[in-house]
Length: 618
Image (cartoon, rainbow, N blue to C red; front, side, top):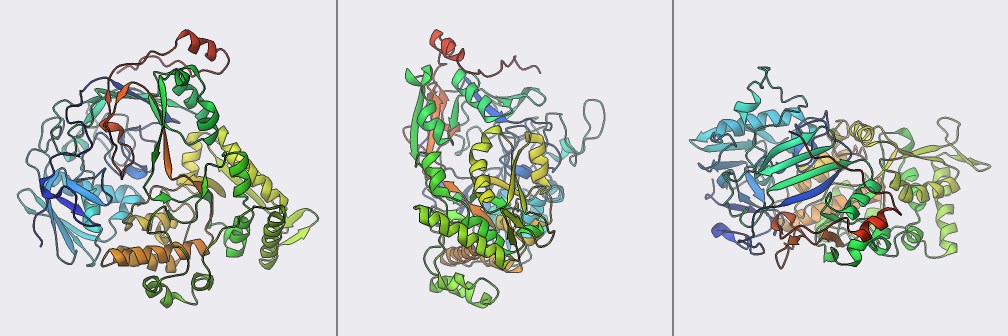
């Protein structure tokens, strides 16, 4: 085994090293107090984010399947806000890895405590690992290569892997959310045994910086800071988690959320994703007089794929010629000009805005992974740089639609009159595009109209959030416009959940496109077992090329800057972390900003205001 370390990095030495005392960018003297108000979308019906059933409340975790501990649970290590693929010890004060990455050991901090004062133990870690990977396909995929977890010292746990050379897996083990075994295997106030395999509305015991203070099922949850949290003076926490309370109010659609932000007191800041609102919408009184500010920040993170995702499980999308035709039909330039004010750029990689994105023709390093697959992957991978259609003239519009129809004909379709006839059914080809908000029509309808020009009967269907989540969980859709979960600059095991064949068949996974390819599986393994950074970059670019040339999705657009709008109630450090872009937990409340002035009231009479939200009750 290697030496004990206080941090781990996949991209080189940390800027802080083992002497990490706090992040440079934070204000170590930031005052505590005040309330952060935030809007959450849809609804919630559970405080258990670790199961497929139910919708977990905001703050419970950092993603689908309970990935990350949210603001209630600590993890073995904590990912850095300043450096990609770098983690510092949290519940585990130190870590060490086998020289061939065949195992990883973590030594627990003796100060680590649950909110009830009981120590966090190796038994908690082992129980959490065994339990989580049974609860959700995301965890089972993530920990696929772990063969054994055992106690190897008084405060030490070791994970053994089935293969050596997986450089990322030790870091992944550090991401493990540690849960209180004694609480989850105990009984509730009525004496009923708790069941972690089911949703629950009983506030769970945690270890993180916040705990649940009050809630109204489905509509609101309020968190309170734990002033004596065991890690309050931890280097990753100094100058952070400054709000005394964090309040999430749930609203169903984006228009209500926008009105809530304009009103004030319900949503204190937002990352604006609508070009129309960014350009035209910030003319309400609070934005005009400076109570609401707009800031443009560079975004250096990997821009993960945003696309019209085709459900490749369906026979109608099984032919790559059909998928390519649907890509050729997308007129991004027209939408960017008429809807997005020219502010978006076409996304052309699953790792856009990073060195991991494939460009030009394959390099010698990439060919090492691609040449053994020759004849099993599209020939264009070797001969052509991947390029998406550019609708810059009327002639190009006609050309791309003509080429799309030619591809449909090659796939066996027949154009009869104005209808594209599906050879499998003898009926007109139909496509349903799924959305979860009325505002989705703005970006779904133009593509639908373009498909209609090809003779495809296209329907845009907007459903409520609960139905949308259920349909996405069970892959019950044909086409959906989504942005995939963020990619890191050091991809690894999570790619199995994004694109792996096993995930394609597992409800609740993030393989929405239903990619089911042994070639893709092999390239994912090449990424997972890359021996060094250059090999990882080459293997990722190789996968990027194969994914793009198989046309699994229709790439949409992205931006390489962040649009931040905020009520002027916050103090903020002079700089924000370069890697994370923004760190709202490093802000503090400097004073409440007046809302609902006479000018606001007059403006509200001309627009639909957000619904009134009564105070939360315990």
